[in-house]
Amino acid sequence: MKGKILVVEDERNIAELIRLYLEKEGFEVIHAPDGGAGIAEFERTAPDLVLLDIMLPVMDGWQVLKEIRASSKTPVIMLTAKGETGDKVMGLENGADDYITKPFEVKELIARIHAVMRRYGEEKKDEKKRLAFDKLVIDMDSFELTVDGRKVDVPPKEMELLFHLASSPNRVFTRNQLLDEVWGFDYFGDSRTVDVHVKRLREKLENVSDKWSLKTVWGVGYKFEVLNG
Ligand code: CA
Image (cartoon, rainbow, N blue to C red; front, side):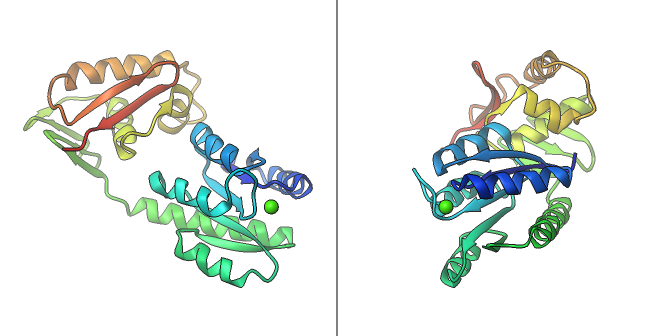
């Protein structure tokens, strides 16, 4: 699979056409028919890219883009109607990665998706591999965890899991998302694997700081909670 794409589009025909072509290209497609559902699906499925219409019921594309950008750098391509030149500029200023004008050629859409994903992948590679919080340093270059000034031995998967959670503070991840994103799609473990790793991490991190904690969100999953002040 090439990646997950969330299509937020209220016109069913367009959405179905996009789904058809993207699935043929090997993408997994999730469809949301309005802005509210778009945000809910974004949080639930953690897509690799979002195709976002502007005129949407419940909440328009600008509002959805704002909500997404409040917590994520996931690439967003805006779907604008013909002649909405002002919208294009506004979209790019508001954190959209690209735009495409409806009606569009499927070839062009696919090319833009690939270009934006490639750019994002390269940016991600350059991202810092070291996170620091109160009494906690997670360094993925040296694979070292420093807790309250002491180096702590941690198995690689626990390190990766902690880094993944702490990279998006306060964001809730489901067990399945963590399995996909930390262990990879090929891993045939079950969600208890995640629980076991979180439990072991907690034993190392308990009572270290009151500024952050590894939290269970009942019925959903886990988050690395950071408290301000
Ligand atoms: Ca629309």
